Length: 241
Image (cartoon, rainbow, N blue to C red; front, top):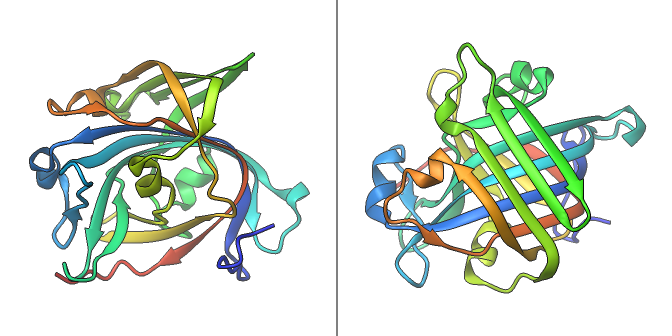
C-alpha cells in the first residue's frame, strides 16, 4: 500500500521497483556547479559536500493508472544524479539534477520528454542475480551512444542493514527530478516510492566514467531498494533564485 502522503491520479505512471541501486559519492561543490543549469544550486551536506551518484533501476508492471498490472511492462533504466536545490535559499526545494537518463526500452526513449518528462538515451541494460550478489551493466547503444556514461556495478546483500546515513536521507527522500528536455529546457518529474525503506549494501565492484570524472569524489553509502511500489507524474520545473 502507498504512503499516506502519496496520491495517485488518472494517467500517473505506476509500477513496482524490483531493484533500485543507488551508488553515491561525496563531491566538492566546486566540481558540481559548472554542470548545473541556471537556477539550480548544489545541495550541501553537513560535511560541505554534494551527493553525486548513479541510480540503476529495474521496474515491473509499469503502466498508466488505473490500467491493471497484468497489462504493464518491464523497464530497466539508469540515471546519473546530482543532489541540488532550487528556489529561495531561505526556503529551498530539494531535487536531483539528472544530466542524462538511459533505458533498454524503445517505448521509453520514444515517449520520454514528449508524453512524459525525462529524455532517455537507448542503452543495453542488464541485471543479474546470483545468491546474495546483484550485478548491473549498462552500455549505451553504438552509433550515437555516449560511452562515457557506461556503468558496471556489483553489490553484495549478505551484510545488508537498514540504511541510516545522511546520504540515504538525502537520496531516498528527494522526489523531484530535473533534467534537460529535447530542446534543452528544464523539465521535471515527481517520483514517489510507496515505501522509503532502503538497505545499505556493500559495493563489490564499480566502473563509472561519470563518477570517476570527479577528482574530489570519495566514498558514500550505497543503497538498495527492493520490491517497492512507485508512481511518477509531471511536475513544475519553474525555478526562482
